[in-house]
Every structure is written in structure tokens, then in C-alpha cells.
Length: 245
Image 1 (cartoon, helix red, strand yellow):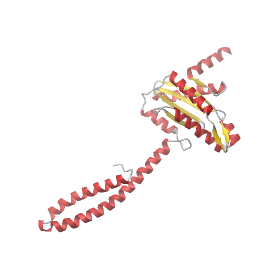
Image 2: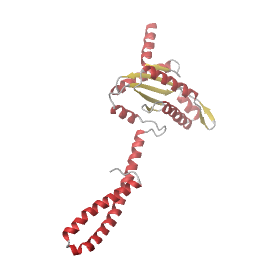
Image 3: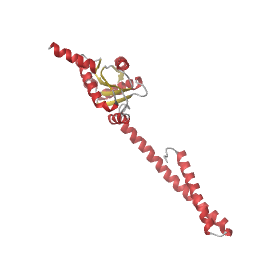
Image 4: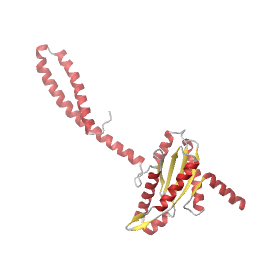
């Protein structure tokens, strides 16, 4: 039985007490003659109710505390502390739960983030990361997953999206971030993001998809940042460069 509230504690204590009384009553009936039943039942049931209710209320509260702490621990494991989006470990665990699903992976990186830290300080940098994470989280669908992959990098899995839909979403994310103003100590800050994307046939291929998205992200940055590049586009661009050379 999972106990998560005071109501659950009361239900647990009452049910346990009823069960205890149901055990004590036939025992008294079997052990004592009928003329002693009234006295023995009155004494035994009073003691049973008092002891069982007190003990089970105590146990129930401890179980409730354990449930609350367990839920908080799971939240800490699943949610990034700074941004409240998914952690990297939780992202991979979610992918592993549905290996046959497909979608598009986006690698999102905040452009020139070191410049923000160097110019305005790390607290300002944290504010920028939080704000970008909120923009990403607010814009994707309920079935999509936003993960802080590390530092100023995020990975987004667009569940069951095709390339066309993902390209449209990536462009909307890029434009929204560019228009977002982060206020730190009354100083308005704006940043842009570069986004690399990759289609994957199954979640089991998530490592390959992220690797491809990362290659596309690198290409987006080398082309001037604040742009979206998908893996097929990046491969074509690299081939053109090799041919030109």
C-alpha cells in the first residue's frame, strides 16, 4: 500500500485496526466460555483498537515520509536542478522504455555562451540557461522531451515527428529564443541558439541520432551560428566543401 497523505495514513490505521479486531474476536470466543465473552471482548477490543490505531498511525506516517522522500529523490534524478527540464540520465531511460518509437533529435546550443559568463558573470549565465530551457519546454509538445545534455547544450526528442515538422519546430525555437530578453540586474540580455537535427527510425538508435545531430550542430556553428542544420544538409555541405577543395 502506497501512503502519500494523512488520509492514506488514516485509512491504513483504520483498516489495520478492523483486521486486528476481526482476528481477536474469534480467538476470545474460542478461548472463553459465553458468560465471559462480554467482559473479555470489551477489554480485548479496547486494547486492540488503542494499540493498533496508535501503532499503525505511527507506521503510516513513517511510510508517508518515505514515500515523500522517494518522490523527491526521483524528481532530483529526473529533473535538472537549474532548469527543471529532464536530466541526461532520465532522457536515456525514457528512450530505453520505448525502443521502437521514432522521431527527431535536436541538439541545441546557446551561441557564444562563454561571452555571457565572461561579461556578465555566471549568475547571469545561469539565468540565460534557465530562460532558454523554459522557452524550449514551453514550445514542444506534451509527448516531446527536453533534456539538459550538459552546460549550455540541450537535446530535444520530438516524438513521432518527421523531418518537415521537425525543421519547422526547430526554426520556431530558434526565432523565439532570439526574441527572448533575459533581465539580469536590470541589464537586458539576448542570446541565439544553433540547432542540429537528425531523424531516427527507433529510440534504440538514439546514440547515433545524437551523434548526427551534434555533427549538424557543428556545421551550423561553422556557418555563422543562429541557424538550423539537419544531418542530411550537413553531410551535403561537407561534401560540397571537399569537392571544392
